[in-house]
Image (cartoon, rainbow, N blue to C red; front, top):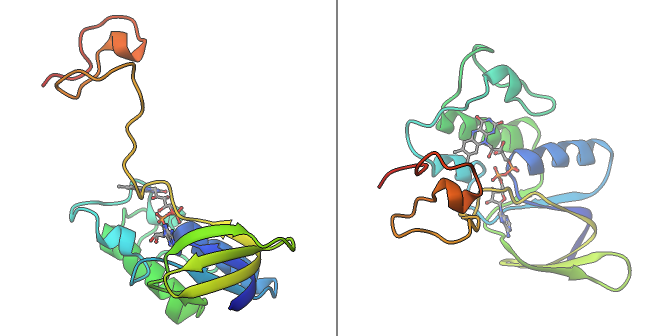
Length: 165
Ligand SMILES: Cc1cc2nc3c(=O)[nH]c(=O)nc-3n(C[C@H](O)[C@H](O)[C@H](O)COP(=O)(O)OP(=O)(O)OC[C@H]3O[C@@H](n4cnc5c(N)ncnc54)[C@H](O)[C@@H]3O)c2cc1C
């Protein structure tokens, strides 16, 4: 069993930024990610995707996003930036291919994480697994055959259907 002060689950923007600050503060930190590359969630998105936020707001602590500050980076540029941030620039302790499948208290104030590559024990855990890993369709009081909800089903004043099949 391996151990650390803080285990970060997820090596996306949130996990990497947390890892940067925690390591700066001297804590033994391990970042695990189920993917086989940093930035994998961006690489797997559609080719034409660009950030809706300009580069000046896309940088993580300690490293500005490259290129013109007002440009809107493409999804592969984001992935490359994250990989560069994690490995080359800061050598953050990222363990790839290490999905966490179970996380529980250890009975001594810490946590035990079961991963695809063994068991990790940590004093604290940061869950940074992101909000977009699994599709979520909210309940809207019943769904019509077309898959489109009407205003009435959404509890809105009647204007006709919100989209047409
Ligand atoms: C299509 C799209 C476009 C977007 N455009 C913008 C934008 O222009 N500007 C903006 O500010 N935000 C944008 N966002 C929001 C963006 O996703 C977040 O700002 C940011 O990427 C979230 O970072 P994160 O680290 O929280 O999650 P993620 O980047 O999703 O990272 C989560 C990581 O956790 C890993 N993980 C998940 N489960 C486990 C597990 N059980 N064990 C181990 N690892 C695990 C995943 O492999 C992944 O690497 C966009 C989102 C989407 C979906």
